[in-house]
Image (cartoon, rainbow, N blue to C red; front, top):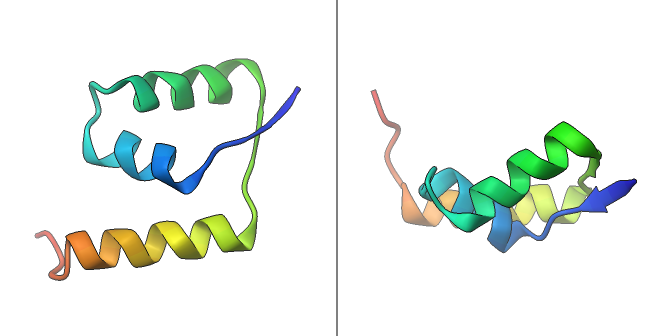
Length: 57
């Protein structure tokens, strides 16, 4: 099954690895086909850029 994940789920999964969104993302990646569109990727990039303005070294 193809599953599209919302940008809120992706950002929450990245921000908190022990969260339910992270579990959902892993479930989709392991059992289904993850589908992302350019809009969702751009939105994730913008949100993460705002939350983490400086690079992590």
